[in-house]
Amino acid sequence: MSNTETIFVAMASQDDEETKYAIKHAFENAKNPERVYVGVGLTCSKAKHKKEIEQIVKQNQNVSMHYVKQRKNSLKTIGIGQGRTRAANLYKNQDYMLQVDCHSFFDDDWDEKMINMFNEAKKEVGDNNFVLSCIPLIYTYDKEDNVVKEDLPKTRYGTYVMDEFFVEVVPRWTESDIFSLYPNQFLPAHKLNPACTFGNKKFAENPGIHYEAIFYDEDWTQQLNLIERDFAFVFPSFEDFPIRHLDGSYCTPGHERAFLTDYLTKNKSNEMHENLKNNYLKFVTDSSRVNSVNKYYRYSKAHAVKGYFSASSKPFPKSYRIEK
Image: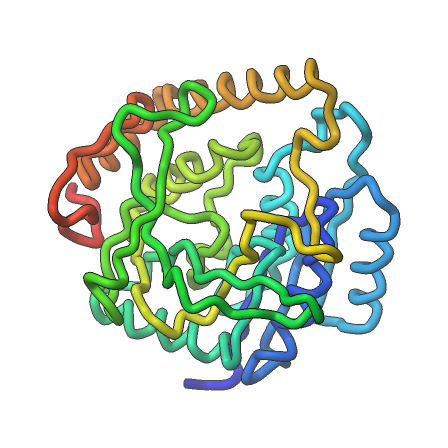
């Protein structure tokens, strides 16, 4: 594989102390760090976070940032769709793009492994109009602030739960341990995981991010936008998958991150959730998306509005490509 192939890493960050470490690991653990480029869509209320990323940008010409200040009780700048869009807009014609959370760890030779994995998946899919996407392995920190790479769970498969919803209208998803049943192979993905998605220029030039997505709605909206362009979704069920996600079950001191509601009063938080529901329903019921909604239903037996799926012994679709 040519070392000249480049990777753009798009990170949305919101007062997240892990961002600076994620950028550090992305370069230090790459086999060819000169081909790695990082773009950060930073939203923060604390000046120290802005200064931290600004310092990194000054020291590394391959890092860029788009900054927006978050003010107390302001809904104008809240939303993962805004952050991911601003990060993706920093893309400069690199060969691949990794859309990832800013609280991520990049394992040794991650750049080469991701490119090789993409090219192996291309042989199975039959074309290059697809993305690799999964819920990654996890990592945390010990008392000495050293990275701890957990053995379990392995890469996890996202799937939707029958008749259950986030904020009343968005289909609820859960994660499944597919690796123990189908290790070290590619599988058709039931859902996109926006926190870890890798694709080529076709993806990078238009990743399908819904700018108005706030939180729970980002998975469905981005996936439907990609479905409209006939993308395939590939789950990499591999033991050595090189991207990890910070364990969110608790906050490690020095590695905390803010959540949307941390900036809002209870009334404003309620307003934000109402906006989320209304924006999502407007998106999936728009007449221009009837085709993509129906295509996804045929593909996975899950519906973007009602949120149900047909259970089976194999929870993944039969093929990578949605049937015409």
